[in-house]
Length: 362
Image 1 (cartoon, rainbow, N blue to C red):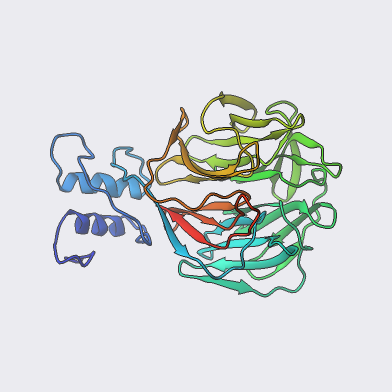
Image 2 (tube, rainbow, N blue to C red):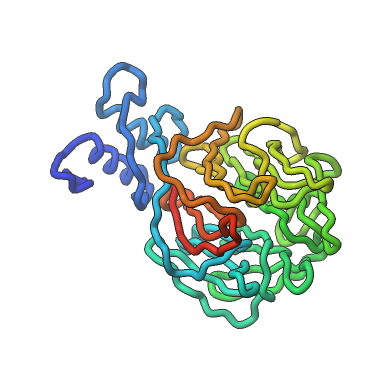
């Protein structure tokens, strides 16, 4: 036990929360902003409120802890080279964000960079995927491996690759989705599987098929659901056991602003209004707050956007941020389960200039 745990020269409820948090067996969360209030709703702010919040942090699901309004924070302007159309996922085993490939204005890339909470570092590789952009990537918490599929290389690709933390392996699944780019994937922690939807085929035609990656095998999962589209986003809400899909552009060229959810068996349209229609946004689910967060994207004229929206399962709400990243499209975001924050990197602005800044939303 300690006294002034947070070193602010006062022994108070924040210190009580930190002690209870560590006693619950949870590693102290890096950079977590703690918010104390009347979590019990009894009219007093006291030690029991701190314990209620500690229970929520421990994953005991009281649902009572107050929540601070998060905001964006710029954490780096250098490191991994500027790019767009890249992928990003959080390796919870290694405690690092992993970004791969994308375009930088002079061509497509094939490099891997990791962010360990302070700065970016390159990861040298031998065998690796061809340079590409507009692929999809997830981290599988059951296996501790990162899976990447497809993308635009010299051709539209249909290969599956596994990142082992320091090296690539070309996978050879018995079946596979058709080659595609501008698709989306999300890891489903509730089932230990990965969901893939949509994209464009080798002829540029939008796709509307749904696939599940389960134990190294791809399986077709649904024959109906959202309209075929490209440039949409996916994120799983593990507490509700659904995967959220938003936006994109359909086969008629119409920009979309609909929201769908996949419950493991079927798709359901859950909202027709919310953020303005857009493509090439970025989305991640904040597991601590139970909120899906969307940032940016491109409107129908191709202009980059800079708004932040939150989906709670019932509706979309514009986030009351005071700081925001510059407008961008074709960027990437992922949830850092160790730091309890959403991480955003790269993209391009309306003029097409590649961006290399790194942001956190917490």
